Image (cartoon, rainbow, N blue to C red; front, side, top):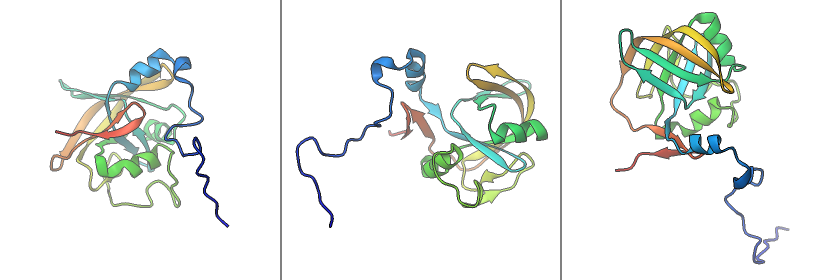
Length: 177
């Protein structure tokens, strides 16, 4: 038999019961959470992939890309071995994909088992992404808790303009007009 408790205070709350209380959170982490960041998918031959929200593009001669990634990730091992990787900006339709590559959503059969993928010399990219950039690894070094990756952008393939998926205050957000 199923019983529903209708007592006051017994309702389901939309907060994380395991979250660190607000007064104990790092001020730097809280600041970072208040900076909206694009959600991207980095992939490398192997294949390997990782959701990354700390990506910066610097236009110049040559064009460059910077990002902070997990030094213990399968992606980093694949990038280090191949010397190249792809970066695809994700859109609102890619929330589940972003969670899967962040390790927050199950991926039976592997990360690349579902969805349509386009093969590139830099790594597979979602066929419905707003485009992708092919990068060659220039350098990497420890930076904070992550690994600062510096790369040269060698190829850019842009599809029709699509709305970005953003990460803000621990959640995915969409731009609204």
